[in-house]
Amino acid sequence: MTDLYPAADQAELLRRAATAHTAASQDVETFLRRLPEVPDPADITEYANLLAREEQTRAERQAAADAAGLELPSVGTEQ
View (cartoon, rainbow, N blue to C red):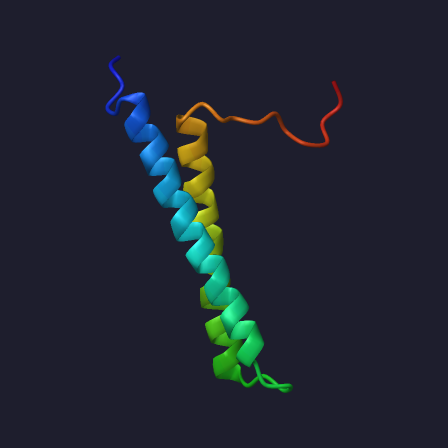
């Protein structure tokens, strides 16, 4: 089977995925900085949505890293 992207394209996809994950993480931080002392239901909903987006972009970043050959062994497994 032929790779759909040359190695350089995999690296670019990984950089873009990392950029998207960074932006999602920064959005969580921005939200937490403006969060009132007593969150209301809308705040909780917004937080849940931000976390879901951050987790999705993290998963996409990890998939791009794996595709670029940066697979890491599982942490905490006995050898």
